[in-house]
Length: 249
Image (cartoon, rainbow, N blue to C red; front, side, top):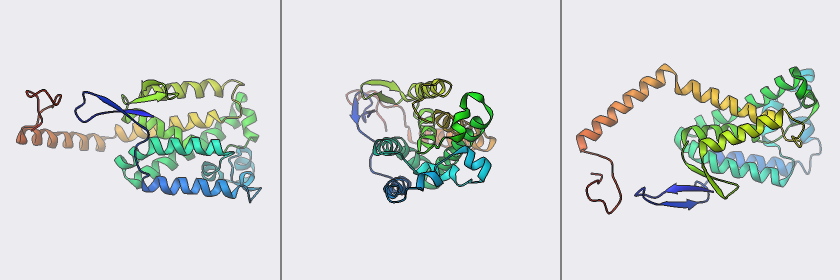
């Protein structure tokens, strides 16, 4: 649940979710649900298509870095990830477009899998993960959370549906939890290394796009056009609906 400002910016209202499903989310959610149901009929589905670093490194099952994102262990796991995908992915797809959104989703999901393979095969504290199967869309979801926290940094998110905190701090808390759990023995079977991989991949990808010279020139040009439009039409900041001295024209 998130809190959105009202039109006049003087009040806040609460709204659950960002609205209807966008095209990419319909396809992603439908695929996840279909494969979850298929898991009840095909007993080897998770063994073959789940991410097991030893299988990728020793047996060359490279497809697992993609397919693991569409498998879930139980109904709660599936529902939580699909809810997060809907709540935080819808606005990103509207902003970026379907193609760019899907590209980002798969890049961070694959990068999360690759980071799991690298860490589990090189660092002693994660050695047991090398022979453990990881499934779920959480790596890609954490990448979406990172993007949401950067783009809508001050938008309130209700932590545990009770405590409103800015999106940027919400993402920081999740990252800190994932980091702590990944280096401790209290992970409870959750692939926190994969979560961290999704966060890091999302940050690097967005940072690269944000600070590239081409994007900087494009940004400056759009700002210049917007400033000219404001001067031409006499647009200035609006205030409350009852404040007649500060109206938008």
